[in-house]
Length: 159
Image (cartoon, rainbow, N blue to C red; front, side, top):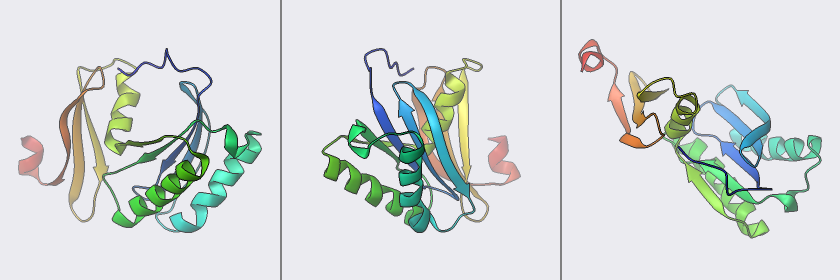
């Protein structure tokens, strides 16, 4: 499991645009303090910068206080990923702060790993058509099966 013990006074801006959800979250140290999201599958390019501004304003955070930018690298929509990556890279470059990329499936798995409920976590995400993205992780958050796409069928589910 990832530990935040050595991180104090870290203010992170977290961007997720890999799927239908357009989301920005504000993290302080090891907790999420606020989030703005819309789940309609479109308009990421129009909403993302507005969401960032609104999130920082309502939490009284000056953009120059950010310590790190984190962005999802997928799997997911190529267009959505490019929108999130371009925004994150631009902000990190302009602010001269680190840019971190994270897997959407790994983030989902870490939410369950933190609860220590199961030995293994299968993290899935809808892809196009009859496909899903699947990644398998251990209870301590380590990747066992990297994210892959699979066609959903009775035969594949039984495997």
